[in-house]
Image 1 (tube, one colour):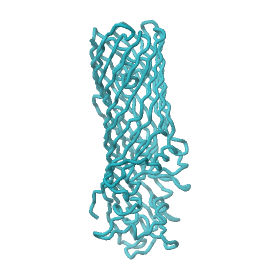
Image 2: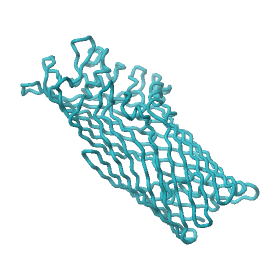
Image 3: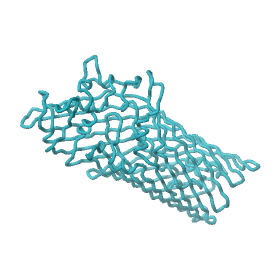
Image 4: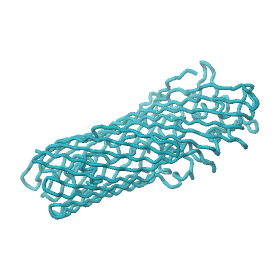
Length: 527
């Protein structure tokens, strides 16, 4: 079957293809703690501190802390290790994750300073490698597909050359169409328009999965703020964002004593195997606003607050799926095999990411020590998705079924950050920090107590658990110049699901332990 490009220009296209899923919204709304070496070495606990190029994007009131202008840049050398029960993978990358400029004008009167700034920062990296092997399996993906294909006429999933293409001409789920045309699901003669999968009583098999994610979110910030009477600092930030995400997934099953179709069109028992490949690309841009305050009632104590609006994303999607299959009846040496693939779907969507609230306190001990504590709350259930409508796809309507899934699967996430700095001499400082990020997935969704729906022909998903980060650093100042270094170590646990648990069946899944180490170097000049 020739691949056909299916642009999103008609209401008739299936909703499962036309809009991103709750899982897509979740994947694209993750963020990581990144920034200057000083910011990272103190665990990112800068909501009440300010005075740092990365702190400006966290709390734009940080501009009011500046008394002179600054320019600086940061190099991040990142080491990542991904470990499952079966495989361990590693990768190393180096990139400039932050650079920026702050300008300050001193004023007379109650408004002591006015400052403005422009900066770049990488707020998320989607790089992740997942590999796993499950033996034995207790169910097949084909049985899961059959469970929600029941009720659809087989003739509606069959191609008629030059007349009917079920991918473009129907609203049937594309995974059902692909599975039917690769004999993963077959008509069940016991009931009309019902289907059965490959797994039956007596079937034994195993499964292999491989997933490779790549991409990033970059944010360009344009900020302004000031200081009132050396007590209140205020700031406003406009963020312009750029996103690039790709996902390539292979899921493979091999079974003995499976319920397979033969070339004669009958059902028989035999060996079965299929490889499901999925490719997904998402690009886009968006913008957000951030408002902040820092209040210094006394020199030794500061309180900080910032509220960041959702990022309003305009996204472009491209996705397709492919299956290689092979079926051999018991006692036969003749194998029925082949390959089928979907059309290529391209469409646009809108996504509102979660809003974020940061509250922080900081204390200054004499002229030598600083300790700061931040709390962050991210409202994941408030994410919203809109899908393309209209004949030319120029209008967008709320995807209520996706937004309901978001509410069902996800919860607000809490984070804590702690930072400390000790000035050994006026030029040399030591720093340490800790950051904790709680899970944003509801317990029922994480434990497989509800069905998790995805879009297109990729039924797999990964849910993150808690993460912990430790950091250490040092800094040196000479006149206006500074150089800072940090070492950051972060761990995160996740779980990959080949497809959703459903109706008491447990799908193949595997735990993924991720370890991240970074060496961060920053340099700059204040003038």
